[in-house]
Amino acid sequence: MIYQEPFVYCDQFGIPLAGGTAIEDRTTLIHHQAIIAYRYGEQVVIENSFRHRQAVVIPSIQFKWGQDRLARANAERSAARRADRSESLC
Image (cartoon, rainbow, N blue to C red; front, top):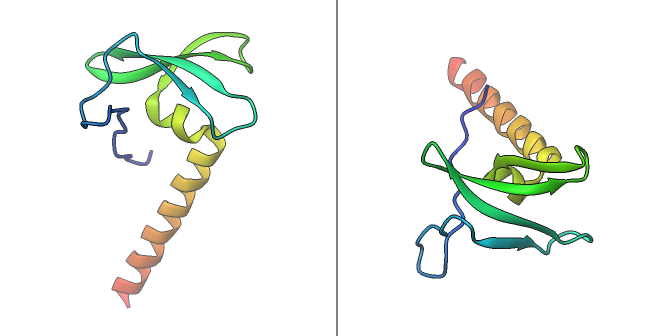
């Protein structure tokens, strides 16, 4: 598993959004709405999943980037780390 920096939605002053705050992703054709919540002290997002056809709780980074884009970014990061390691061994 790849370590990933935590992502937190914040207001314009850099303060994390309060639980119950509604947010919207306008970067896609279908604007996804969600609600900020906290689980075990970590910020999560509650959204209606088209895939699961019900409300789901997901990490905030997954709502921001989407599952596919997040997986691609992690794969690229891993490949870059492997390349760095192989260069340092030479």
